[in-house]
Image (cartoon, rainbow, N blue to C red; front, side, top):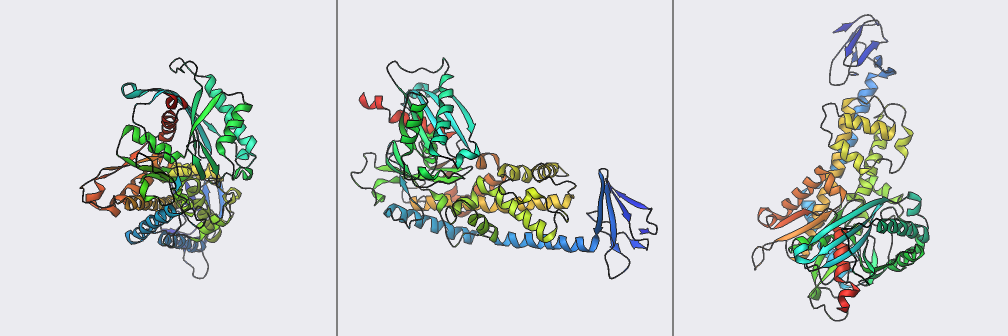
Length: 531
């Protein structure tokens, strides 16, 4: 097609091309409307792009093509750096299993995995009865929950919960500000107790406190904070007993409640899962942050001092977010994110696979493409430079956009960054970026699970034959991001092989940590001990 006069225009969808050069130009209609080449050699053809919303200004076609190729090159290089072939995953599995063993041997500060002894040596049986509360603090939101338990026949008679967002300033504020806010919301929830919930006369309300940060636990209801993660940094709390902090805050609010058990969210998820299925041996959290716990033979814990529990086992909180290995596929973007985080050098595994960070990794990649390849034009949107403005729910929504024109991607980029008039191929590139980052995260999470199975000897068919192993998984990343969930499951199956993978069940345990905390509060109730 030949254009001789600049007044002539070729309409392509909502785009109209008006040529600035009156000379002959041959139109080469490709996927993108800007794919025109000048009939004159030496300089790229200038054209104006106009949509129904107005003029987008002059576009240099030759430059645009070069920049697009540069963008594609950056993405291709990233894909290679983030690749997780089965050989690499097996090395991650071996490294994880070894760090688990090292962490069980001693409390050495150099240990990557703290392998915290939970003091949970008896898991729910179904006999638990009564009204119990749970407070689940594990990320940017916290939940308060109440459950009426009816024993083996009644099981969970009724339950209610509410979720509260923690103001950002409290995540980096003072101990008193944070815990007073939590206690006040808990007190409000208690006042709404309905007729389906019954507290036996003469009893104090009891609570299981799910605290999903590294803690040095000294008893079932006592533990000191080792360090924060997931964006929290209340420095004065480090080294203090978190149960005491909550108790004092509840007293200031006039709330009469006893903390019967301090549990990590993974331990709570394990307890909730075991309540429903006796084959649950591992629990994993994949949400804002990530962690895993599992049931370990007591005689396989050298650092466990004193008498072995009668049950013969102990639940171990691995704190696997701090795992690191030279086999992890870490890029320059991950290193920069880590260096600028509130805990540089720590929680590298978490920064590669958890919901807190996946959106931020994609934002950094988009900024690189905007700076080096003009992905969004000559002007870089200011919001593209704002850390953590792009969330993992954002990339999940874009990645799972099934509309022909990727409207969800377009709207997300507009709402988050203020970017308009995004060509379809750019939207497709954004989806590709989300896939690269999510695929790496999912496969590494799967390798972590297989590392625990290897430590337990459940990654092979043993002498006793096939043993069913259930992994209870909680967290929005696993629950709501189907691409992540499916690829994690595929990685586990790929690593284990078809025969062993038939014995391993990955089971969604939504709100398992909250139910689990109430169950552990029940099994450690001061009243059940008296009776």
